[in-house]
Length: 220
Image 1 (spheres, one colour):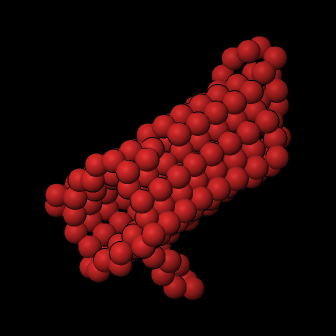
Image 2 (cartoon, rainbow, N blue to C red):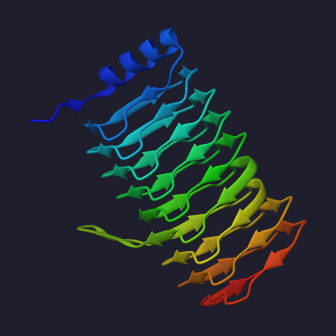
């Protein structure tokens, strides 16, 4: 039977990786949950292809290198709120079951969520992303549970970012970009928003591509 790792095993590997000056590697592992807060992680950390049975919770954590969740499966919530990532955030093709929240995070290089599938919502309010934000072909879907439906909304209120690429994205709820500042360009080519596009107070300093953009209603 495959070993299931917990938070203590994660913490031990992070310490060992720091001593050996290597990546903390959890690629393709099965993990019960991750619950680490107010910690500084000095090495790159990879959960590529990992299956996390519970939640991923990093609150107010500083990552001094890349954070990799490429092709990982998270069966609960994914939280990186108020954390700082000095490298890249790589979440291409990640699958998240109950919402992904990056509220107030600072990412000093690129944030890559290309082809991510997220049920529930994607929260990026007040994020600061110095590099590119890649949301190409992302799917943010409604989540049905016994209590009701959590709409597949994307929140970028008061975020400060360089470029955003949302080409081919599917958002089953609304896209809320009120008060956002985009210092570069915004690409929404063939983006599909099933509900409302909110842009009130948003600033786009560079180019804007909207060919094929679809939405139910726009509030600007």
